[in-house]
Figure: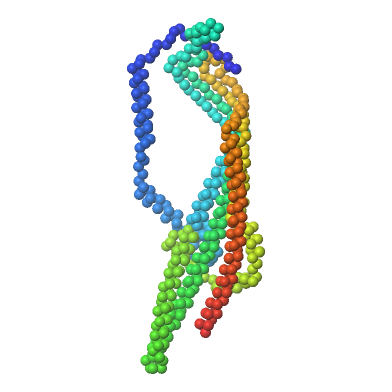
Length: 435
C-alpha cells in the first residue's frame, strides 16, 4: 500500500477567462472537423499509369529464365521440369505456402504472455479538493486538501499470462501447422495434374508434327506421280478417273495439313501456358520414336486393379488433405470445449507514479484474476456439438473421396485397355493401307 500526503490550498483557484475557454473549444472543434474532412476525401489514383507499369513488369516476368536454353530441343522430361519450375499457378500456390508458413509462426508466437508498457500523462484545469462527511452527525466538511496535483505522470510495465488464451493459442498454432501441410498436399496434387497436362500437350504437339511430316511426304509423292498419271491418261493408257482420284487425295491431304497445323499451334500454345512462357516463345520439341516407348507399356492383362487401388488410396494427396482436415476439425472441437472453462490470468508488474504527494513513487504488484461467463456456456455447448458434427462431415467427405478414387482407378484401367485395343486396330489399318 502506498502512503499519500496531502497539501493544503489557501482558497479556491481563480476561474479562467470564459471567453478564451470558448475560443479554445471552437478552435478544437474546427481542427477536428478539418481532420474528418480530410479522412473522407477520395484518393486519386491514375489507374491507367498503374496498369501500364504493372504490364511492363508482367512482360518481364513472362520471359524464360536466363539459365534455360530454348534453342535446344526439349524432351518430355525437360518440359515437365520447366513447367514445375515456371508454371504460374504453381507460383501462386508457392506464395500461398509461404504465407501459411508465416501465419504458423505468428500463431506460435501468440502463445507468449503479454508484456505491456504504459505511459500516461494527464492535466486537470483545477485542483480536486477532498472533503469529509460525518455519518453520525450528518455534517459535510468542505475540504481544503488535495491528494494529486494538476499535472500527473504514471508508467508501468506489466506481464500478464492468461491460461485460457495460452491454450487457445496452442491449438491455433497447431492448426496453422496442419494447414501448412494441407497446402503442401494441394500443391503436390497440382504438380501431378500439371505433369499430366504437360505430358498430354507434349505428345499432342509431337505426334501432330510427326503426322504432318508423314502427310507432307505423301503429298510430295502424289505430286511426283501426278505428272506420270496425267501423261498416262493423255496416252489413254490410264483411265481419267485415276487422275481425279489423285487430285481428290491431294485436296484431302491439303485439308489434313491445315488441320494438323492448327492442332500443332493449339498444342504449342497450351504447352507454353503450362510452362509459364509467353505465347510467342520459340522452342523445339525433341520427338522420340513412339514404338520403343509403346513397347515399354504393360499389357492390360498384367495390371491388377487391387494393386492400383491400394497404391492410389495410400498416396493420393487429396486423401492426405482429408486426414489433415479431420485433425484440424478435431482441434476446433477442443477449442470450443476449452472456451467453456473459466479464464485464469496471472500478472506481475513494475509501476511508477510521478505524483510528488505520494510516499513511494515506485512499487511492484502481483496478482491473479478468474473470470467465467456463465451465460456463455449454452452457446459454447452448442458450438461443441456443431464442431463434432463437422468432424463427422470430414469423415464422410473422406469416404466419398475414397469411393471416387477407387472409381477413377477402374475407369482409368478400362480406358487404358480400350486405348490399347484401339491402337492395335489403327496399327493394323495403317499396315494395310501402306501395303
